[in-house]
Amino acid sequence: MKVIYLTEPYDPKKIDDEAISLAMGFFDGVHLGHQKVILKAKQKANEKKIKLAVMTFDKHPSVQFQKKPERSIKYLTSMEKKISLMEGLGVDIFYILTLNNDLASLTPQDFVTKYMIELHAQVVVAGFDYTYGKKDIANMDTLSKYAHQQFEVVTVPELISEDQKISSTRIRAAIDKGQINDVNRLLGYEYQTIGEVVHGEARGRELGFPTLNLEFNEHIRIPGPGIYVTRVQVSGVWYRGMASIGYNVTFGQDRELTVEINLFDFNEMIYGQQVTVEWLSYLRSEIKFDGIDGLISQLNQDKKMTNAYFN
Image 1: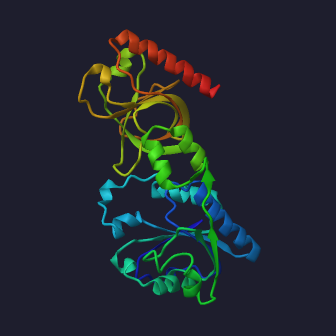
Image 2: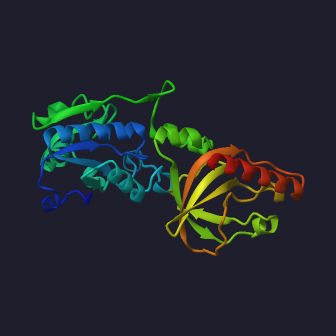
Image 3: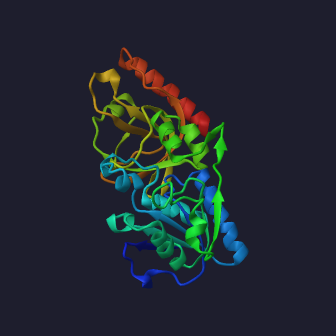
């Protein structure tokens, strides 16, 4: 897959000089609804024997148009993960647009001309709610007018699960509530995050459950407090484990949120390394115990439940 970064005004020489079927959207999470859009564009590409291209922005549109602080945005997928998912879906060209003032100031017609027609799109596919300017004049209903018969417009309707639209907003809310089983079902794959192993209080080792203590980039969305079944990739190898996200309430009040993962069959010091966490299932909420013995007993039960999940 070819990844092409474009900044307005872009150099025309960067554009791949072949006809494409173009899927458009921000695609945070690349969930089942997004996959429906991309696979529709792929179907059109196969029918016309042209390449499949996808276009996205380098940051969430709300940062530019609603002036939200970028530090407040927590994504479902990093750009690195998004690129990997696009490649897995068979995308040939992945265009990533820098969302800056020059791009945002384009008229709907200019945007369609520069980022659809001049990219050699024969087909443009997007979700029913996709916009490329002010919603009332730059939506999927008006796109055919701006296309001037230069390309076919395909609008993909919303994908429904349990009487609700599958959306990034819905998935973010589920992650925050710890509903990781629902998250994975709506994504169509297991949710992953990348974190750095840091020093902790070493209390897990004293309890007989040594843990990796992780810190995450401020833009990464981690699940809400609770105990989870996980897999963790360390140096290319996947290990089974159980994760605790919480405030260690058994050991005092007003503590900071921590992410600690007890890996099975693993006993290495890897401080400073980046690891990938795959969040598989929710086990229980965080519990405050009266003493250490109750906590250790619960951890043993958590381990049994985690092994039962994998078996």
